[in-house]
Length: 321
Image (cartoon, rainbow, N blue to C red; front, side):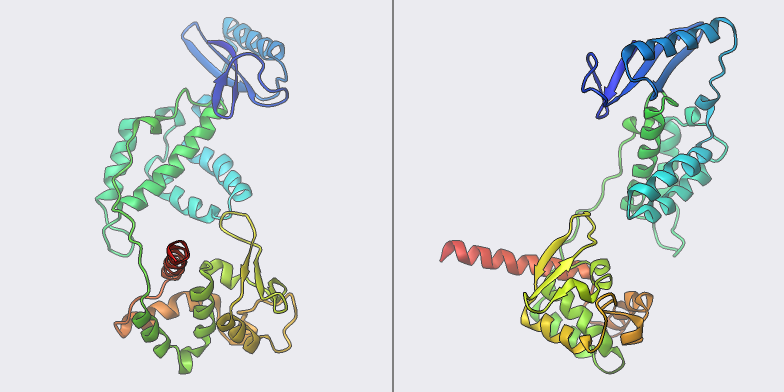
């Protein structure tokens, strides 16, 4: 114990990299177990001064570690959710997953939440139906536990808890992910129903099948991302945060040129003004109609895996020829 430095989530010896990491004071005194981060301390000497101050307050009976008794729900709302909003594009998913956690641990302090209590939460969520009256999957519960683990990691980094209780909780076993490929016959069936009042979905499906782009990437495309001369599509906003440039083949070019007309460079390619189609309508339309006719369900994951299968086959042919 005493004064030490944490860098990249690990305890290091000495000062470590200058200007990086955070100093931690850790000791026991008069029934108090103290472990606090001192982010203001720039040197070990300054951290030791903070430690001396805390010890003096304990001796004078003035020490009150109210922060250590932080309410779980308050910490999630005041610390975790703002961090997720600032750091993650998928923060709304984390916010949604945090709701059942706040409901279950309502009124609990961070220090009150034990591995055994988390196990009760895990089993309760697994054995209750979802809002759609379907059995909740282990994967859903595991995603919620990931959020809980991050909450406690942040609390630990700020010296509010002594350990992360999630380290002693095992995740549920999930079924192996199914890698689904769209066959040529299924593709023909799919395009056969994308006519008439569903014809507006066809260009999006073509782009998805030919490029392997994700749904959000396609719906977020603007005309400035399309270069007809170079025959490329620039994907600026990706799930990984790293932009990428994709080749544009003939089927994609034909569909995009038919939509271009007099659209400005800032306009979304698949905009409501051009197609009369709201994005939320598209997200449900294809699946609804395909399922009704008992055709294979069209999802973007299938397009991506199908493209990867084609690429794998071509790579194999290139190396064996």
